[in-house]
Image (cartoon, rainbow, N blue to C red; front, side, top):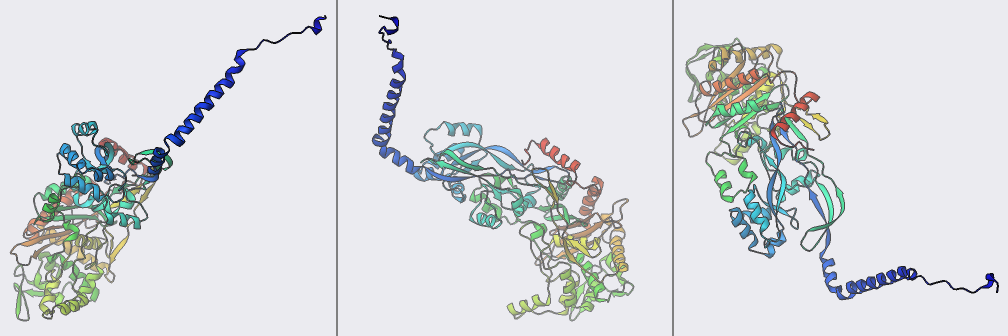
Length: 619
């Protein structure tokens, strides 16, 4: 047989069956696993799937820094250990917060209050305690039975100085329902910490930034297991204030334990240079666990440390109001600087004799202002009449808020004809008599003004007829370096005063310091002007000590108002204090044309100052 036709057979290779065998085994395992999940664990997995749900997590944006005009950090951000808790865990285990409180050495009621006051994260972690020590953190972290309680690090607000700026910066805390609604009206979502007072509150929309949002799937313990989508937070803006830290601290120390306030403004912009109110409080207590007892103690303190006296307390301004009486006479056309009046220790008004500060004899306007002659200005007020005087006071901002960017500002009281009619309607015994008009002209009686209103009046005088709305923020800086300067916004103004009349007023204010009741305010080499005031306090023998001033007279850079409660004569107490503040400000050179925060160099200084404090910049 030919080789070509020889029969043969191919040997069978066992490797040909390996792949089908593997596939068969895999299929069997898959079917077994499928049966196990679909049949054996059907009910269990059904319950777990039902317990899982998608929800939105809010991520706070880095809160914006607050710095002074030179870049000194006033409010920053730092990492801090905190204790968080899932509300549902605390609800299911009544002893949970009790045990945590024992470790933290706090009252369980304080933790419960913190847990319930945060209304925006009821199903997620809520911060219930800040400022945790390492020992406490380890104790809690090691306790396996504290299910639903966690130790975390969070960026929290801190203030290098918690007393000097308590009334101006305010503080942040967990939001309540009113805060949530208020911030929602501004088109934003409330963060876990929001501004409650001061600039922290009024500039919330700038400082808070925009909350980031993450959509996640949660398990039955409210723990995120999967992220569906993520939108990063937009950092808050940095606020560069017109305040000068060195001047603020200097003024604070200068006031010592006196009760009262100091307000200093830059007249050409309305920026607040310094604002100190005493007694004050320590804002640090609001950043931690605030017990109800602590707050009640502060709120009920007879010295009212929570009140910012610079904007919230309106009292009789005394003789400082004679500036208004002067401007009212100028407006009405009855001002004649060379006309004289004889002061015989006071003025007889009807059946009442109203005393003056002395027996000044025959005085013209210049000497009457210099010596603060009550008789002269009461006679001028009677010639004006209450309606004209009240109308001018209204134009100058009395009886209305200045609009400074803080909450709690008082309108004060300007006895306009409308107010008088309402007072008569409320009290049939009330009437307006000539004696009240006389008191009105010297800043007494029904009139009441706040220190910020009086400082604003001096700013208007410094600008010869226009004041800019008092405000703290000089500029806002975004995380990308963009800077938006705050434009001065015109406030109260007055017309009808000639250039010659303004010069007469300036000259009289200068003579008050050079030769008059405020000689104690003299600064070598500085020509500046001011007016003292000693206002009676109803039911008390002591008087409030007032002083308002503008410096320098030839080119005003600063205006100041000092009010010290129950301290005595303005020339003896308030004027010397104002002198020190003004001298310090001019010595610091903070009034130089090169303003901060509007140029790249100044912003670099801000960043450098922030870096020195160890605080992260808002990114």
